[in-house]
Image (cartoon, rainbow, N blue to C red; front, side, top):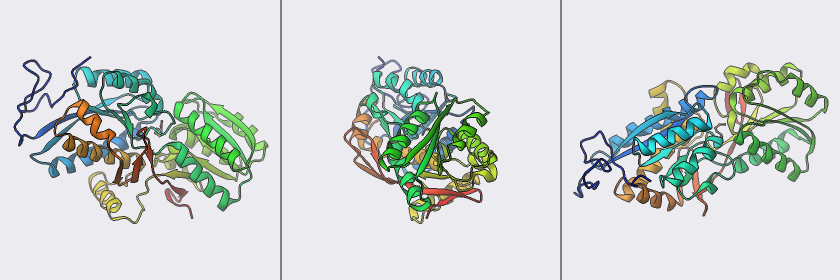
Amino acid sequence: LMVGCSSGGNTSAPAAGEGGSGQAASTDEQEIQAKIGVVGFLSGSGAAYGEAQKAGLELALGELNEANKGKLKIELKFEDSAGEKEGAINAVNKLINQDNVVAIIGPTLSGEMFAAGPVANEAETPIFGISNTSEGINDIGEYVFRNSLPESIAIPTAMKAAVEKNGLKKVALIHASNDDFSVNGYKVMKATAEKLGLEITGEATFANGDVDFSAQLTKLKQTNPDALLVSALYKEGSMVVKKARELGFTGTILGGNGFNNPKVFEIAGPAAEGLIVATPFSPEKKDDKVQAFVKAFEAKYNKKPDQFAAQAYDSLYIMSQSLLAAGKAEREELRGQLAQLRDFTGVSGKLSFDEKRNPIGDAVVVVAKEGKFVPFE
Ligand code: MET
């Protein structure tokens, strides 16, 4: 295993782990140099998730390096996993062994974290999920953290609201069977439907990469549900929504975390109207911190941030706070500080962490209206 020690290798600060004693000079006043790796779904069918995350991280990076001048300088090293387990494993290995990062943010998908998290955990390097919403992420090991609200909190919130306001009694479920996140979301949807006493009229699956959903949706429509519950990533999920409307389904459509990206409106077009999802972040929230973030994000990127940008932004603030508390950029000390996090208020809301480092927080329910998500009320 590599030494659990890191400082920016290409800065003027003494670089640990590159020969010599590996010890940074211990002048109290010295600026901490922290190199953090990021593994994101930056190309391929879910690239908009990774792009949003990169944008949120880079905005936070600029703000933090300015605010912490003389105390802490963070450098981010981005790696593209293309949403593939293999890609995530390779990226994590490279960041840990070649780039000698102090911690890793990402990867984007829960399935990628299930594959690459154990690698980081084994190498005793903190790895911090910013969008992994499946059950079981933190069970990978004690070096694994996340600030993303699990589906088990978000989906029931959305379903309860939809049942109350739209009077649902019968639901049909469809999900991507080859994606860990989509499978977990489907399980939560099914368990919640049972708990709420809803009748399940039918179920269907598809695979990521599919483009034709007519057979499944025709069959589900014939079971006459009040609502269609969709657990998928944005690309396939948006095509499912579009097709369901084309086939004449007029009931409620409710989706999981995968739909929290503006790509939904590009792909589904007007068919997105009425789509219900839960999210821990809404750029419309009347909160000073949220509005300051939205303003800074719009100034830099000329668009509004989505949930993925917000959680990415918050994660770097958590890293910065923990690195400053640790007083050095070392993996073990950083892990210790991250593990002590009990609550954190960021732009994606107030989070508490349970004894397994799982975030607990509130989701807001939003509905698609004229090309954007607005509060469902
Ligand atoms: N929430 C997803 C997951 O946990 C990733 C981002 S959007 C679908 O895999």
